[in-house]
Structures are given as structure tokens and as C-alpha cells.
Length: 86
Image 1 (cartoon, rainbow, N blue to C red):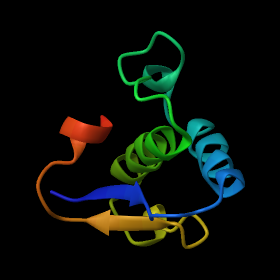
Image 2: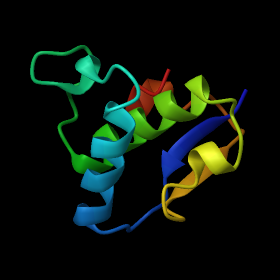
Image 3: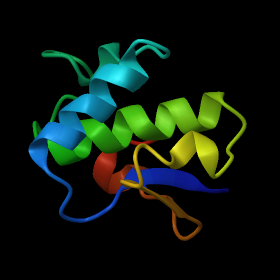
Image 4: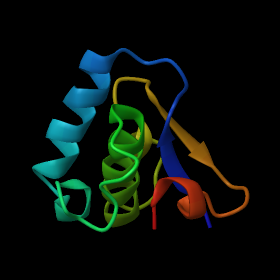
């Protein structure tokens, strides 16, 4: 399996833009206040969740994880334990 996560050190503005874009296309309710994946409440974690959900629902292609060159496809241990990506 592969996942799409935010690259280290993108700007907060870009992370928020990624969240806004992805959440128009997929259900991001788990990262809203009170949602199962709200904590940790950081832009990085929320963006990675939204970006990965978009990636998973749009063919798992390089293009679906690009996000203005701020996405990174990882194929390692399941990162959901730390970032609620699944």
C-alpha cells in the first residue's frame, strides 16, 4: 500500500490550501473538531489526512498526490498509527 502525506516544511498557507481543495472532494469530517482524527490538531496532520484521502479516492497516482509539489507518496509502514491517514 501507498499513502500520500505532506512533505516536511510546506508553508501553513499551502497546507491550508491543500485541506481546502481536498475537502471539497472528499469527506474530511474526521479532522473536524470532535472527529476521530482531529487530534493531533495541526495543519500538517490535517493536511496529510485530507491529501491521503483524496489520493486514495482518485486512483493513487502521482498526480493525485502532487498538491503543488507538496505531496509525497510513501510506501513504508502504515503511517496511520501516527497521522490517522487510513
